[in-house]
Image (cartoon, rainbow, N blue to C red; front, side):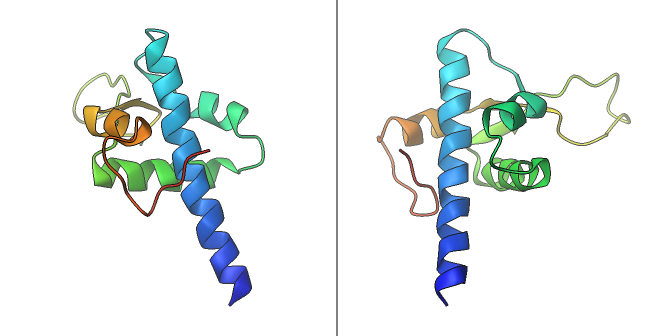
Length: 103
């Protein structure tokens, strides 16, 4: 259906926007980015949408958890992320992933 295709495309674009934002922060020497910062940059997406796509990007190895925890038992979820080398390669066009759209 057309609606399903539009939602898939919106999701692919959100993933690209997250990676572009993390790459921009890293170029400014900010490695760990709070999910709340991503939420404020992407006001047209709900936090749960952003968290879901951050989870997807983590599974693919494009971002990693950068949450500061008191110890290994303190697991409240991902609060901060950083882009990985694989994520940077993707943003720079060195590699491609059809599940992510830039620009």
